Length: 435
Image (cartoon, rainbow, N blue to C red; front, side, top):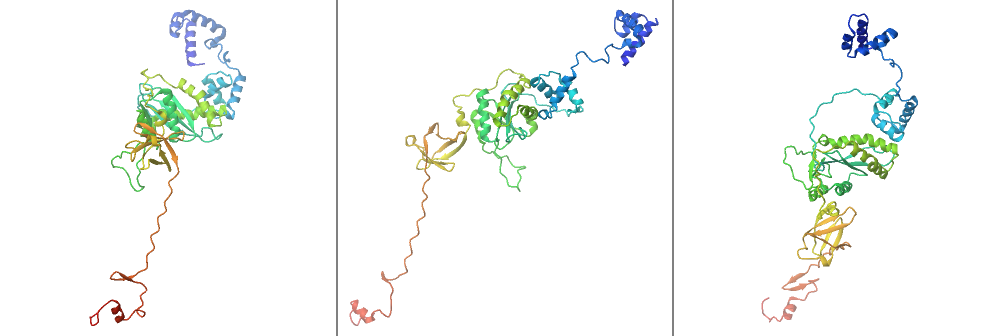
């Protein structure tokens, strides 16, 4: 008997003994005088049990049958539902097995079956949260998560996610690598669906920011910041008119980080139940099952109903912008070198100022090459590599010769030479002249 029931019994016994009136007993118990008379009659028949509800200790008429409980526990004990919490388990019981019970009921069942351990409530440290942006598309958090998404059933893959800061709306896709091309592919899909947001909020990964190269023995602490050229994604965002904001810590982009925590729990378990084993199946489940649930259940209404996204204009050629772009100088023979290959510019596209000029070379995501000079594209064709010219051999040195007054004496032998007087006669000298 509870304390409230004991207090009620004391008041009723006082009224029975005429120590207080029935009206005073009713005021003390907070009930009507008619109900006091009803309780006094029950007290005469049943004794002290009159103040205890007649159904106390009996099973509720609304209690779920034991066979349903046993069936639910048998289902949740299977390996497919390993690690499921009460909330997720109740959703899958209703969705997959038509067992519609409350989350609290499932929690009690799982605790009794030792499938769930109730944790103690703890008060976390209170943080001052940054307010959400007011409009959809004003700020989009962008990040990639590495996780064993298929739990060893298939190849490794990564999840790239874009979460709107104002609405918590997701836009995600599984990829096989966190490369510039894969991130550009998702960016293109986002732009075609929603338009251009005002800004993207990312970490300082190499695909978003060019790092300053320093030696291991050196430190940049205290040195002036060096402005580095943008990465390919950074350049693309500039050409699209989208501001890039770098987060200095994972906590700064907590919305997308907490989103990954949800995905690593619910999405992993959902794909396990669905039997997902490939990248294609994972993306199909993500787009048809998980993202609709997330955007319906976890998304919020923005403070301002205005959409901050801007439409794509004619100048926004996504094939050209979302490509690998470099600059090259046109050679004197109107060729350019790119990616260890030589490309010849078509004769009809040759114009004044092209020789020696800088051109924009775009390596598209489909593998094609496009070359732009100022505001027009040039027709190019890949040509064979220039033949390597072998260096000419130096001329063989002539044997040394002796020269006297312009005359060469080759293989001169003094013993075979003429006498002096014979040489004098041959020269036409007159007798008596001194030599």
